[in-house]
Image 1 (cartoon, rainbow, N blue to C red):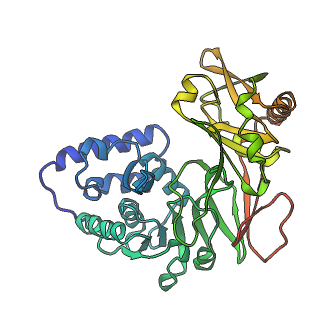
Image 2 (image 1 turned 180 degrees about the horizontal axis):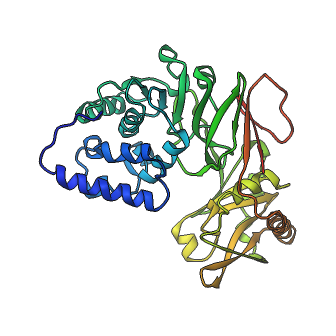
Image 3 (image 1 turned 180 degrees about the vertical axis):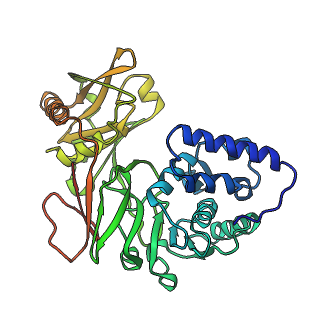
Length: 405
């Protein structure tokens, strides 16, 4: 489908593009011929003017817009994550696809390749300058059939509905009403859902199994995304524990912020489980399992370099600082190096009830290990108002979510 013109640097770009594809294939991110063809065809450099080719074809995220405080508002996502999400989405030739979050336009071009011939791709971007940039990049690269809309992605685009596939490229707090209404029967929506106000996010592929019911049974992606803005914007919450440490949490748990702020003034207490893990073990969803099974409120530590270097707080480098807390006490997942690429799992606690919470967390880890380390959640989504919410459900304005292992 691509009709971009060749010119100076084309050969070098083509070599870098092929190297990127082979790397993504070797690492398991590209698994299908359709995704491989799209990546080999779309010229990323046309969407990132002013960025050198080596950077354009690296596997890292490229931030393209920041707010006045320096926080990322838009980016070209890591090609690894883009490939993983396209494999989840599995668009087919002729499909109608809605993308929420045009960003640079690269993903819309990949979708156009995968749905051609006769497919329809609509992409929505909140900011006019970003929408204009995506439109310009798509035109430069020869994807003039992609429809670019400046608007609020939470509303979707009913004019071109229903969609066989919907893909969301920003962190969403909810499955918005517009997406429920515009997804076709038996359609699929891929969405990075922030399942907790701490920012814990997973990218789920939901298949529509009924008018008010979606189910995700495939392994979700561990990911982080720029949060959605506009009508679907949702504020995360945290308590500062030290200059370089925050505990991100859910306001509905009614945390004692004053007590928590003093937790790190208490000495650390360590508890180790004897459970051995390695980087290659399929245990990436332990934090999600802990959220579902913990009897204490869940949170995540945000730790800066100074706090890590000084060993004030030393969470495991996996699971983004997953923790539990109660009153003025916290306990978080920790690693103890045992050599040969293995680590022992444990808990480190601070606060007046450190022994209790450390024991509680290690008991949960023992439970997880005894259950053969479950790593495959099943997530069901019901349209809010179509059934009562249970005590363990995650309740959103438009969706009731149930997570089980």
